[in-house]
Length: 78
Image 1 (tube, one colour):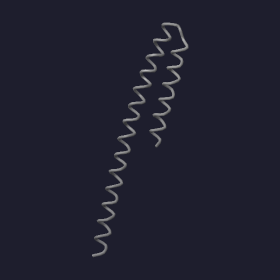
Image 2 (cartoon, helix red, strand yellow):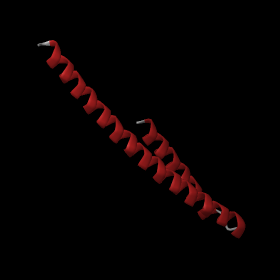
Image 3 (spheres, one colour):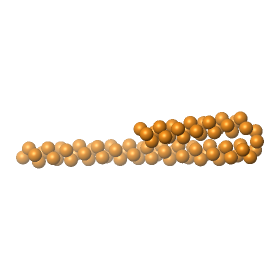
Image 4 (spheres, one colour):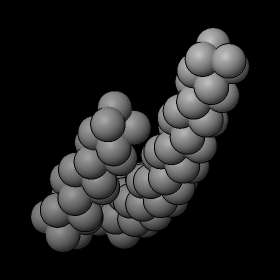
């Protein structure tokens, strides 16, 4: 959940940067703002991918814990 909120924060930063690009008419600052927006978008994509990987790892860990618990219970009943 925390990584998703980070991704949302980065997306919000990207939106603010894009609005800033629209408001500025200076070529130099607009170019820098566009570059910053691109970097923010890339960071948001990386954060989303990382969150997806963490979620998948958590699901695998939970499945392994359930399997270990079942095996433990099976051996204690013998």
